[in-house]
Length: 187
Length: 187
DNA sequence: TAGCTATGAATGAAAG
DNA sequence: CTTTCATTCATAGCTA
Image 1 (cartoon, rainbow over the protein chains, first blue to last red):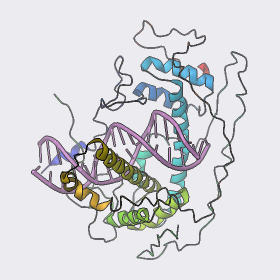
Image 2: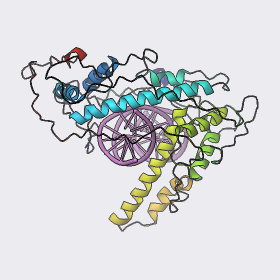
Image 3: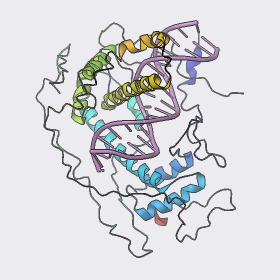
Image 4: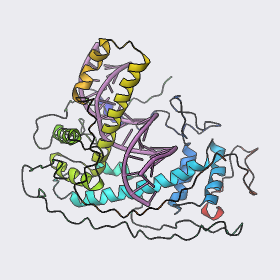
């Protein structure tokens, strides 16, 4: 009788990357392995996420500099880290949303699969899959005149929704056993 | 000492993925707990492996969707699962090969132990560690992309210690907690 | 119960 | 912006 299952899935019992919490913590590799890559502190991630959620998606060079400076308090960080963070975060959110959409549509066959599984996955990022309140750069600081051509953008996902151009392959809709034609020539 | 809450999902029942090929043997967590991780069915793995062996390494989004749709018959599966599967499979094969390589050059020991030890391991995946006949994407479908040469990079030189231009905020020099004014209005 | 291996998932960096 | 690569974390499922 192991009722150990009461412990549910331990999530991050390990030191997690955000070992932070304390003083320097910073970027030392959690596992102590040779780390040549930035390992964000939980605080740093929090701030970045917050900014992202506030609508910032593509920070300008200046913004990146400022953010980086601020975050350096929590540990070592470089501008490029911030740059990459936003780039990745944005790309992944979009990519994820795309997959979900498709997934959602294809879910017609499934019988009773609860979607609790995907819940956890998107609990962090896709918290707002509807708002779409992208502010896309946020230039509210006139300081320093205008740097280089930095203010334009403001696109509204125009090239995102590409009609999937329907397919004609037998989409198992009413068969018990799938034809399952997954040869490469089929894809 | 270690407060490593060893809760984790106790999994006593070995439902095994390859159980009777029936329809749903799929992904339910052994314990029935709501594990958030996809647990591929043996059929799904078989198909995926087959595709991989056929040369498919980096399926396009469309392909991923199709594969996912087809595999959904065997049990719950999402696009991201397929995506990750290929990503991991490819990476690991490469990693493995590289390790062997290094192993070979670095230490000329390489006695049979090596093989016997990993025999079981290689029996499944590295069935062919020599060919390298990667087909790399298999674009049998038009799949028009709208990417027009848009190259404007933003290079970050190591200017991490760049003086913070002109900030008036008290740069955490004597405080335990930073002022951290990272609201968008600040940037 | 503890350790190990295989592998799903995540994400920093880059390349394209 | 999109996609791929490299590493690492977390965990299911053995195995001893």
